[in-house]
Structures are given as C-alpha cells and as structure tokens.
Image 1 (cartoon, rainbow, N blue to C red):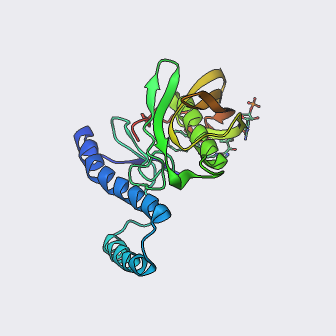
Image 2 (spheres, rainbow, N blue to C red):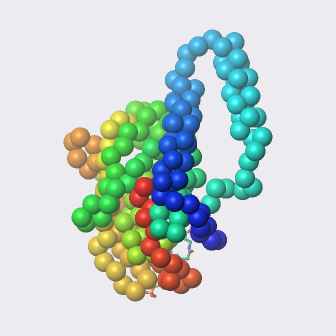
Image 3 (tube, rainbow, N blue to C red):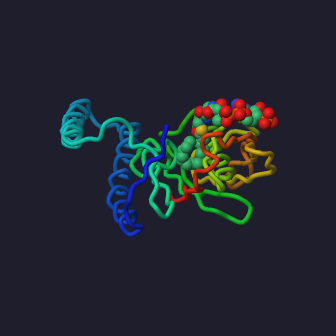
Length: 213
Ligand SMILES: CCCCCCCCCCCCCC(=O)SCCNC(=O)CCNC(=O)[C@H](O)C(C)(C)COP(=O)(O)OP(=O)(O)OC[C@H]1O[C@@H](n2cnc3c(N)ncnc32)[C@H](O)[C@@H]1OP(=O)(O)O
C-alpha cells in the first residue's frame, strides 16, 4: 500500500484536471439520466449500444489496476480515483473540500444517484462523506486511516444542496479524534465522531494537500 509520486508540475496537474473534470461530470450526468429517463425501450437499447462503443474506446488503452493515490513533489494530492473526491471517478459525489480555520468544509449537491429513503440521501452515503471529511481534517500532518467512526442520524437528509464540515478535537500520539456534521438549509441532519490513526509506517510521510482532490 504505497502512495505514488507523480513527478509533474502544478500547471500540469491543473491542465489534466481541466481535461478530466468535464469527462467525469458528463459521466455523472449520464448516471443521473439513466436513473430518471422515461424514453422508449428501443431508445434505451440504442443508448446502451452507443455507450458500449465509448467504453470500448476508453478501454483501448488502460492502466493496470486502480489509479492509486498519487502526489506531486510539491505534495499536492492526486487521489483521482478516490470514492469521494476522485476527479476521474463519476461515482464520487462532486465533493470539493476546502480548508477553513478550524478544519475542512465542503458545499455540494446530491441528486438522484445518492437516494436511500424517498427523496433523501442514503445513510451509507452520509457516512462515507463524513468519514472522508473527518479523515481529511485529521490528515493535515500526515495520512490518517479511520480506526472507528460513529454516525448519529438526527433527521433525514434531503437530496439537494448540502454542506459538511469536520474538525479535530484532540490528538493523543498517533490518534486524532475528529467530529463533523452534514447540514441542509434548516441545520444539522447528521453528525459523526471518530478516531483516525496515523499508521506506524507513515509517521515520516509528508503531509499532502488532499483537499483539491
Ligand atoms: C486512505 C488514504 C486516502 C488518501 C486520500 C486523502 C484523504 C484524506 C482523508 C482520508 C479519509 C479516508 C479514510 C479511509 O477511508 S481509511 C480506510 C478505512 N480504514 C482502514 O482501512 C484502517 C484499517 N486498519 C488499519 O490499517 C490499522 O488497524 C490502523 C492503522 C487503524 C491501526 O494500526 P496501528 O498498527 O497503527 O495501530 P496500533 O495497534 O499501533 O494502535 C495505535 C493506537 O490506536 C488505537 N487503535 C488501533 N486501532 C483502532 C481502531 N480501529 N479504532 C480505535 N482505536 C484504534 C490503539 O488502541 C492504540 O491506542 P493507544 O493504545 O496508543 O492509546
């Protein structure tokens, strides 16, 4: 389990981000369209055929295995396959995490692809987002892994515009305790607390700025 050095400039990171982001956004749009389409079954079959052609084009040149967790010499993180922030991952909600004074926050919109209860965000999706954000808040001095996380669902989280934040409450050796919340326009819908651990093997790994994906 290794982080990969991608020896490219910050300008090249930005250029590649600019190339992949619209592609990933279009695939996200495709996912939403498939969930909500009401076109005829013939039209669906035609769509499937055309999408399969695009998949075959993309597969004509592929890397082995997952994208991995990469970083530049300037320690800019490129976790572009990541399930929450991956620039190349259409399954990832489009989560853009920013550092704020007391931790991290993100404003985002969750649509039909994230539904659990009717019109509401799946509880597992809330847990995934909070896990990432708490982990991100705890990872400022080095990569942290989730040890234990507890989520309390206060009321349903409706699909739509949401925000989340996370912050570190305490540090004891390699253990960082963090808390976080997801909120809609009426306030907090669920909250989390967890312990994140800097693995023994990673104590000398430099902190990487993961927030920009
Ligand atoms: C993930 C990277 C992605 C990069 C993208 C960027 C994003 C950043 C955001 C990332 C967010 C995404 C995050 C993800 O998705 S991380 C993915 C989900 N998490 C994992 O897969 C973790 C799997 N477990 C492990 O690797 C090890 O067990 C760890 C590293 C956790 C500890 O193994 P290690 O050998 O180092 O530990 P130790 O035995 O020396 O114990 C040390 C201390 O820790 C205490 N302890 C141990 N285990 C637990 C536990 N489960 N709960 C609570 N406490 C625990 C233990 O009592 C002791 O305390 P004390 O006795 O000293 O008081």
